Length: 437
Image 1 (cartoon, rainbow, N blue to C red):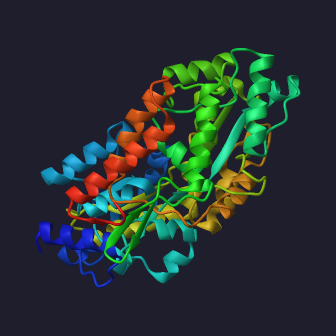
Image 2 (cartoon, helix red, strand yellow):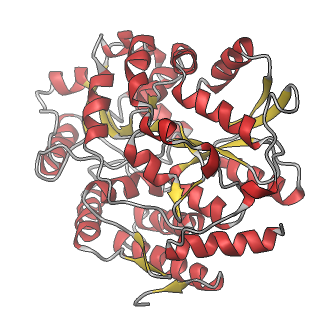
Image 3 (cartoon, rainbow, N blue to C red):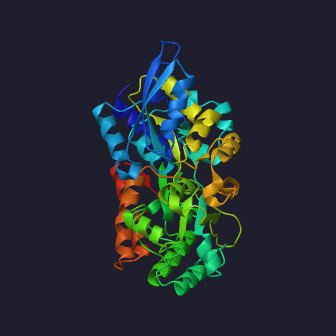
């Protein structure tokens, strides 16, 4: 089966929701047991992955996994994966975040694993996560975690200055103003100019749906009321100097957290582990809360979240999916990952959430049950959102334009428009139809 034919069929499936696919799975896929012991290679970067792989290898003799940690996706990991696929020396398995999965599918870089994603496996996983890995009616990856939004804050600062933890976005603005008044250098949040996914999670939460298909065409909707509301809100916070604009996870952001210049973090479930690992000396100072919403009722988007996909060159598809399913659904896998002390992963496998909760040391958060917050946030994720097949183009443009807007040159409205226009051009360049554009 030729790669170019497969890519055309895959792109058609994404564009039109076609169902009768016989894609890359027909090109190969030996199983452990049918051909003797199998060695798989796996590239990823999520915290605790090495510990989970070690646990797998200790418990299995028919499959051995060699793990290589690579930079996170947007920090060079995705480029490394793409280059390896093109060169024909990619690993068997790779970590892929939900926003980037359609991009890899449209490039023909990963395999259709539908025959191995059984109804029993799907039943174990968060439905929203399964939907995000199902494109054109086919399954392309095994969801590992969900990433509902969470707000982390310095409870000592909020208590000392009698600032109410915000439940609404109006309350967030009021709290931001109160924090700056109490301490001119303090901000309760950061607009990350380099990280469009945080902004996208907020428009997702507000009810936007940027990408959809109708017939054989793509529909882009980035000028909808929800997006306009979120854009105007954050433009106002930037204009009034109520949030910082540090690059995400940069030395500047970290130093601001250490010095008390940043006393809040709009993140996701995995952010609990980030803060714990980044600021160990601030144990007991931080707490977590539901992310603010527009009306005070629970609502969340997802900020990241990862899957495990099988690359097109793998000769061991069935064994690879067996490993990916184990990583997502085995108690030993989640226990090893979270007990590493580096991860606060929130499993897509709902039955494993108590396992993760027990494995997570809550001392850093003064014993707070952060996984109860994750549960509530995950239940409120808007399931209307979907990602498009040119996310890298969308987000590269947004990153460039957000940087300008954060520096006072241009606006967030201009940035979103530029991202949409660039995406339309890219889709048409790939021969895809775009409605109304």
